[in-house]
Image (cartoon, rainbow, N blue to C red; front, side, top):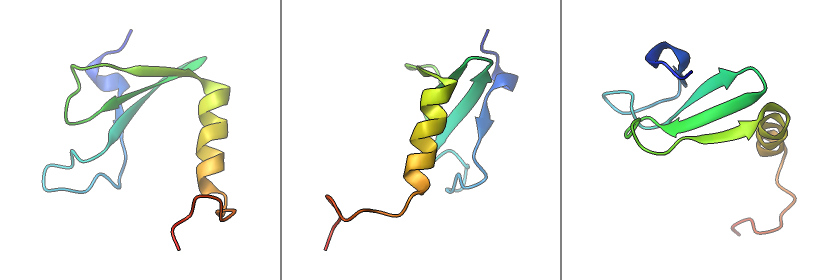
Length: 69
């Protein structure tokens, strides 16, 4: 169950209210993500392995494909 204490906000939230980011909840086998500015709206849920792979791919240097010049 997703309760207010379940969600964690990034330390890089930015903004005066610290609400310019997403919040993440660890649900054992899944990761839930929501917009911190609209927490009552839709929540995206991913299998933990898929989310981990996505985050690792973001950390990799760009291959140049689709990168701005």
